Length: 385
Ligand SMILES: Cc1ncc(COP(=O)(O)O)c(C=O)c1O
Image (cartoon, rainbow, N blue to C red):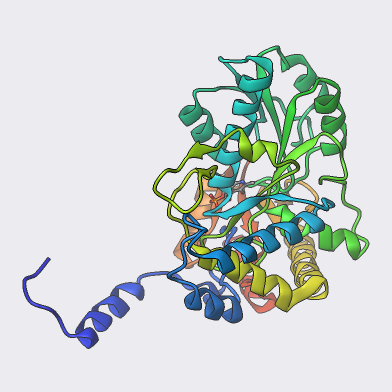
């Protein structure tokens, strides 16, 4: 740090120049991100609550009421009348809390000390971090030919050390929904904690179902489901950082509680201590602002763009990996290696991402990608071949 204060304008000027290196969602060139530009109203609200700290809720009673309200309201969206949980930094922290709750619950009620978690091969890498931090062994359940959990393979790997089963509603790479109803039954019969990672799908599946899209049940209406991750900062258009962890019962928070002596509350169950109230409040505000109708419209638009892009890709000779269930299209060209195709798109200034399983270019059709961007992209894809 320099000795003397620097003038604000000079600092802002420097920051602006560096900020210019960042890609902007509004350019429509970011094709592989599950985040997007937050809605201006959510940003406005966020700024008003920047100093609130939900780590010390006795000092920020109003903000805590808003967090509780937003958790109940996300719970209702997921068919749960009385939800518990928190707005956290994102899907990673939400998944970490779910796995921690499952581990502690199994330790307390079943005496399991060397636990395992069963995750699909398609699971987000956040579960690997969670298992590492919580000293759990990862057991992977194989996928079937449709890239969803193979339920028979899952049954085979359940053991007396299993502390949790995880399934995904909106996989990171392909946007697919696992057979959650069947897995819920298995988990329920075996008395095993079942977590659904709907970080991506949680803010679209309920709305798409309401519109009549044929999508499977994935939420708390299934008795085996104990917790769901659902991220407002992905399809919910809330500002980063906003992840959501929703628990069916308060006891899952209680098994994680540690004493918090110097604070205004006696215990704390979240991973982080000091945490932003702004995220919870901006999520609350944007959910009110859109309402179910607004989110239905958004989700429908993104799906229509997805179907448009998928059909056009097929017309120009590209192979689409699977019929999209949500707003992700993964594809290859039969005559070109995926990495080479990705680098050709990068040369044309598109920011694409490559899926690993199976290897393919993966486009997440978020709200910032409009029809005109897709048309430009299709022109470039045609030119590559
Ligand atoms: C299914 C799923 N779960 C969890 C995460 C992690 O979310 P975050 O990056 O917000 O921590 C992602 C991120 O893309 C995801 O797709």
